[in-house]
Structure formats: structure tokens, C-alpha cells
Length: 171
Image 1: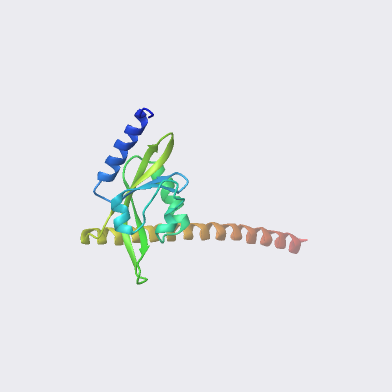
Image 2: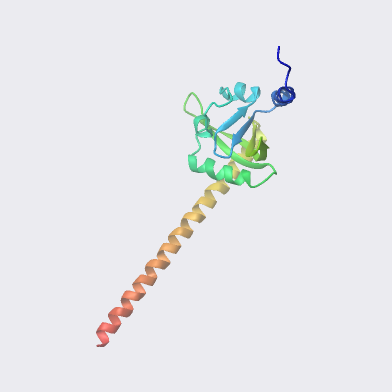
């Protein structure tokens, strides 16, 4: 019989700690693949996460791919909990909002993100509503800034055409 490896006992201890966390938790790789989920996550969201499951956040939640890409960039940039709002489509087609905090961690030799989920708390509903409003306003400001840049460019082109017309008229 082979002797047990010390790494096995370390991994078993880590899995025991992971399983004892009372909130739903996910571990996400920097490329967006879900590496691990605890039992609370499986019971709360109906997704059992096994090693090498090849699941991404978009397979579980209904936010856009772009949203998750930006969220991962934000979370990989900090070791402090940073809140986001995830949308989950229910069985009856009604979307529910979930408050999620994420932050950077190490998983083996690579960067990863830990996500902690907060479920159905009425005091959080207002937070979710305000966060959604802030995100909407940020998106609108970015959209308007792009439009203003395009308008400035078009105005510059119009001025150049007017100048050429004036030169032609003056000859």
C-alpha cells in the first residue's frame, strides 16, 4: 500500500474548510471558468461545480459576457471585496438580482477570484436597485462620451470642407 502524500492531507483540509463556509462561494479562474463551488452554492443555485467542469458564469447567470469580463478585470485588480449584481433567470422566467462580492486570490500558481453570494435580504434590495442605477448611469455617460467624440470629429471634417469651399470660392 502506498504511503499517503502530505499534499493529499493539505488538499483534504482545504476542501473541508471550503465546505464549511456558510455562504454560497465560487472560485473563478482569470479566464472566467468556474474552478470550484461549495455545497451551499450547489443547494442555493442548483449547480454542482466539479473540478474541470468547464462551466463559465454565463452558463449559470444571465448577465452578459461583457459584464462578466469587466467584473473579472475589476475583481482581479483588488484584494478587497468589490460588489456587483448578478441576474439569474428563474424557472418562471422572472429575473432575480443577487448581490455578489468578489476579490482576487491565488489558486495554486495562478490568479483567481473568490465570489461570495448574498441571498434574499430586503435591506439588500435597495442596494441592488442603487447599484443597478449607478451602472446604468455609468453606461449612459460612456455612451454619450463616445457620441460627443464622434460629433467633434464630424464637426472638424465639416470645418475642413467649409475652409476648402471658401478657398475655391475666393479664387
